[in-house]
Image (cartoon, rainbow, N blue to C red; front, side, top):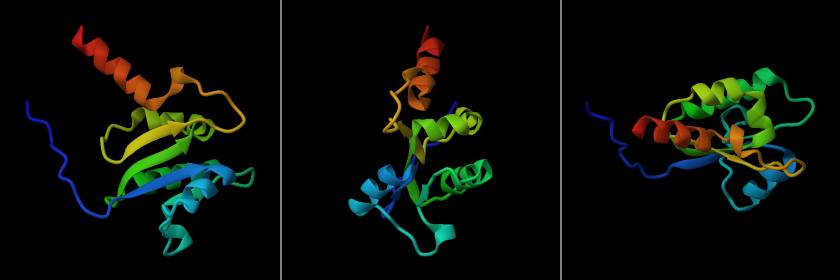
Length: 123
């Protein structure tokens, strides 16, 4: 049984889906890459952002070969949990980070879930 190996590429980007403060903080570090709004590597989610827009952005980012890591606030990740739980690719990797107003819940974390599945298979 052969597994597909990841072939490293140059110029891979981070992407972020989060609240205004989180996205702004990451953009201030220089990780933003926005040619057009529809082609940016970030999405600021607020009360006006539709569920559909978050889902479409997640699909677009997970299918972008120039994205290596997607960072998402856990509260936003919880709204698209069905997509995150069914996501199987290694690259881009989805990393959930704490939201500023809520305590981090390890039981719903994507990476922790994958680790638990992997450990159960080895038993």
